Image 1 (tube, rainbow, N blue to C red):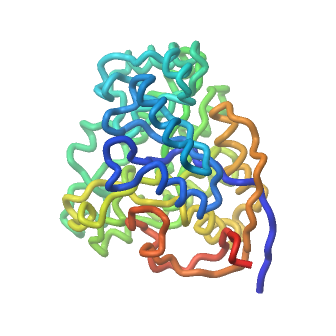
Image 2 (spheres, rainbow, N blue to C red):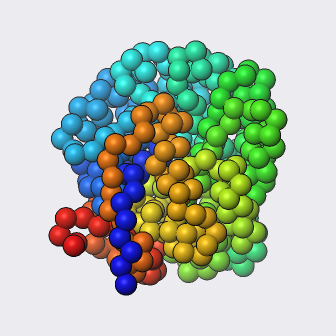
Length: 362
């Protein structure tokens, strides 16, 4: 039975389009097709490309190529030159070129002093700072969540303190400098609680999570399939509950995909594959399945999380476009049918409820 409605178009403030430099994984055109398929009219793309988005010329390249797509692309530029964590980029020049935020996503800014300077300078320039919260010394080569499953697989784990400690650091720095910070891809109950407390104390902190963090848990790793490996990793069932609670009470501001395409060959080996999963074509359906159809989160809250809030955090106008969605249509995720170049979906084979409709679907 159909339940067809129109809702404002979605916006994803955290995607990896891999362009320039890694276009065998994805490019701006293929990424735009994937995003449009999933109901997005725009995305903000992360700067860990080759070359990195650390100067105005790369920002301009992205914007120029995006003109070929029926789609809005907003570049996120690097916090540090070459993403090396040693010297800040020229935030004013990057903003003038068209950057909407700064981040070294894919890497943390390891120096507390440098991150403090970044918060101050970015705030002066009117650019949000997006933090990839990870302590590399704690990670120390881990590839999945440290716990029951990592022990059973005899695989080096990623301790949750890596995420929680840097989340706490960023919140403390934002409080000290009276600036704002956006925490990327929150995956632990500890980070949710840190952000919740910070908000209650007036810290200018916002945050995001992804559908896989409230729909899946670390038991998926028993399949020894690298398509279930991402960073931060799938956590415990208790973390899933905490993420859902954070969405329900307003602690979590956005649902994003952290769309991270890789080739089939790159994802072939469980132990050596790069982290990351695609999500643009499944995000709304996964969210409706896990949160709306279970009665956990109302539709209007989901629209805020996936459409309005990400745009507002980046200082962008509210959506003008609408998409058509059948809330009750069930479909099975078949990555070979994706518009994306990549197939590394952690929702493959699942039946989801809710689908974006396009011309020809009616």
